[in-house]
Image (tube, rainbow, N blue to C red; front, side, top):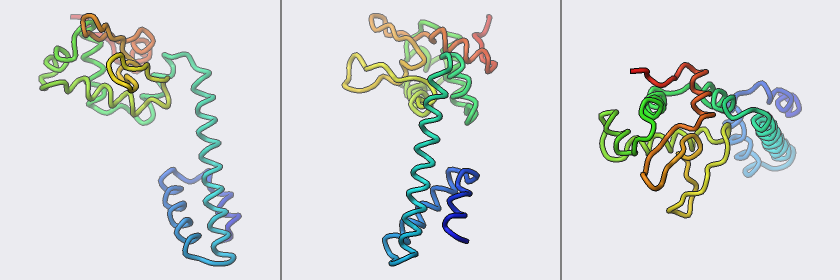
Length: 176
């Protein structure tokens, strides 16, 4: 198959297929000589260009959406895991709880809720919005993407936009 036909078909390939193609082509480019190495380099460049273009298009698409819709998109693809649903639901059901209280409400130990919630926000940040800076560390506060944190009481409450987005996904506060 010619390199131009491979490049032409890149948009129909999955991320995983492109990753493997890039890996093989990079190996060929570094080990090969002549036309084969040049073709492999051309393929790597084409994959890089396509993925940059797709990332830029995603950023523009996300910027155009209200925050509640960003939540829907971020948690629809890929679909929420059972753990993500659990950490979201417990915060919806218990606004104003501390991380320790949220963890206990789940029957977990230590600061497990905060770790899972922060990781979830980190993993989906590209479809949400930037994390605010941490008040106590030189780092981003990923839980702060979706939750308001009251530092005087160390409590969390789901942001209104996130609550609206999760409602569209069927997650609502339990009503007693």
